[in-house]
Image (cartoon, rainbow, N blue to C red; front, side):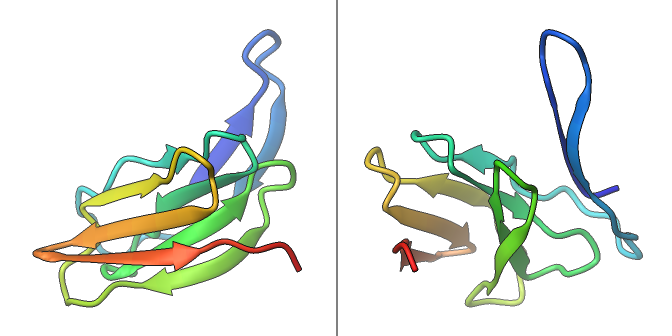
Amino acid sequence: MIAELREISTGQLVWRIHGTAYQFQSGAAPAVSADGRYALISMPGHTSTSALVEMATGKIVQQIGTLQHAGPQRLGFSPQSNVAWVVAGTLMATYQLTDR
């Protein structure tokens, strides 16, 4: 299991992302956008990849490669929830989030 969302009050599973990690590393802590629509998570086994996840469904909307061989060290969103950011090593990449 890579990530899951549960209801706090009941513990009931809302969604789960399955996967197998072949390389274990300490990845960046997940981040949730201020509007609660998206999360950014590190992808185990993919040392330089993060994923943008739709919180309502658990669907991976986009996989994001970092700019270095190092995995993501910090993940986050702007206060307006319209920009996601990934820090890896000495680089920071920003991604504009738009509705389709």
